[in-house]
Image 1 (cartoon, rainbow, N blue to C red):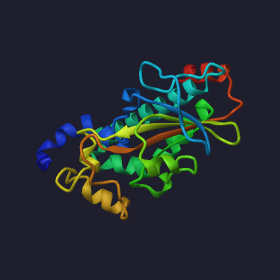
Image 2: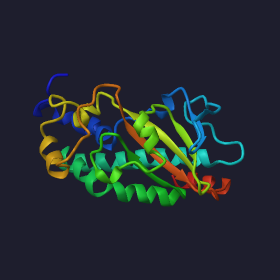
Image 3: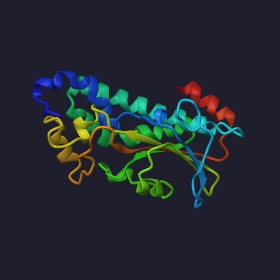
Image 4: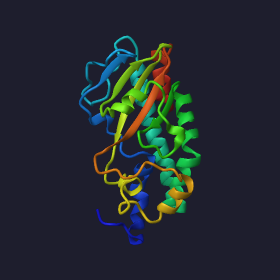
Length: 225
């Protein structure tokens, strides 16, 4: 990919949003899902047509997890777009640094879940993987996964892959926008989330749905969107 110049910055508000948020969520395009109870070996689960884990017959917690993941992606993307339109592409780095955690907490509260993002190449140390996620990070799983936690919570993992747009913040030296590099160096001096290539696995959205969550919670979550 040729190095992008400042002459290209007029298109950034339209495409950088998804690069900063963690790239395009492709969990709906994957072909397999696992449903496991740690420490057992993951076992295949019935697959929904759209690629996401199929909602469990006994409850709607899987659907709640998917809605929460989509809500986080949409809300963070919208905030990044707003920042870039008003203050330029570098402002999106500031949003990720100062607002992303708060946005995730807000989405989690509305949907009755805990939610976040993680990767094997971290930009923000606060996104380090939770214990149940670590085995999947180590093995670089690239399909949606389900885990039944000890406390009865349903935990779901959704892969994120690198697209062309993502390379502007997570690609090689010649891919990352010049306008973004200084802000990245300032905010994340130990940044490891670069050097990716097209279609690489970037990381994951993770969601934990409490064991007591009911179908009525899913309905309430849907009404909040």
